[in-house]
Structures are given as C-alpha cells and as structure tokens.
Image (tube, rainbow, N blue to C red; front, side, top):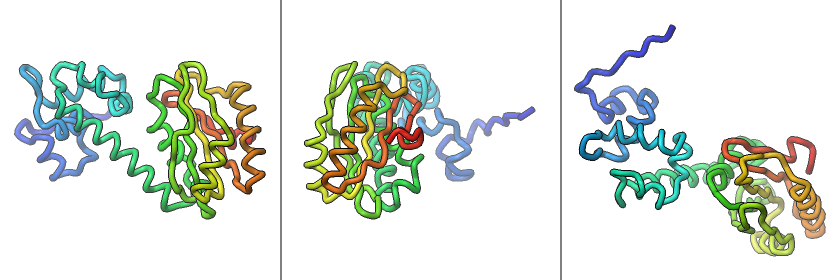
Length: 225
C-alpha cells in the first residue's frame, strides 16, 4: 500500500517546486503556479483541479479552444492566454526535437507532435511533415481541412509543397473526429495514390498517421504503406 504524505500547509506549490522539483507537484498544483490566483471561494489549486475535470484530462485542457476556456467561471482573458501559451510551447518543443533528429528514430515523438496538433480538433484536418534527406523536420503544414466526415487531400498540392521545401520524404497525418482510429478504405486509397505520385518526383512517403483522441495508428507500422 502506498502512503500519500501531504505537504506542510505552509509550503505552497512554488516553494515545493523549488525545494523538491516540479515532478513532485500534482497537476492541479502545477496549474496553480501558472494561473497564479483563483477566484472568490476557489483557490488556484482548486481551480486547476476543476479545469482538468471539466475538460476530462490535462491533454483536453491544453487542447481546448479559447471560447471553451473563457466559458469557465474564473477563466478570464489572462488565464485563458496562459493556458493557450503552455499548449503552444509544448507543440513547439516537440517540433524542435523533430528538427534535430531522424524522424524514423523517434516515432513516438512524431506521434506526440501530430496528436498535439490534431487530436482535439472537431473537424478533419490533414497535415504534412516535410523532411530533409536526413529525415529531420523542415516544416509541417496543413494540407487540407474538411467536414466532420472527410477532408480532401490533393496530391498535386502536397507534391508542389514538397518540391518547394526541397523535401526528401514526408509523413502525413490526419485526425478522425469520430474517435475511431481505424483507417477507412478512402484513407488506404489516398496513401497508395500519394505514395505513387510522390515517387515520381523522388519524395518518399514514410508514414500516414491517423489520430483519434488519445489513439494514434501508423500505417507504416501496420505494413500498409
């Protein structure tokens, strides 16, 4: 049995972080440091706990749009901007990692990055990660945005962008707002068509990721590229 030892009441989250490290703080305590203050009848830690509960998880909170955040009692403009800034910093940190190493050597980072960009969206989006000849990320761009049911990806536009960025390879990723990560026949057909079209200009299609909430499927890992 694991015993939970409560911190001294006089030791606030900031003091605990400096004394013991950020890893010992709970998620609501870390959020309290960011939010700084609570609201009447609700301290910052309680507000942080309520936010995680409201959005279902920390990931859900960091993926929330501004309107959803500002609809929560106590979440004004400043606190909403603080949460949005954390989310964007997390995405940029993941992007930096992909720019310094071989994408095939860090598949979990690629998945986390794509999930951070797409996992929370309510309509289907598709992005392309353009890679250099050492398979490091050059840039990531949205290539389509669709309805709840589907998005239209035009291989010609993906190829044009690939040539513009002098890409040697790319990874595409799109989300399934339905929450079901299994590839559709249309997904598989697009993958085959795009792979063939890219090969004509010597660009490799390394993977096609499907993001559905917390789930990510790699067609390359399934042998479907």
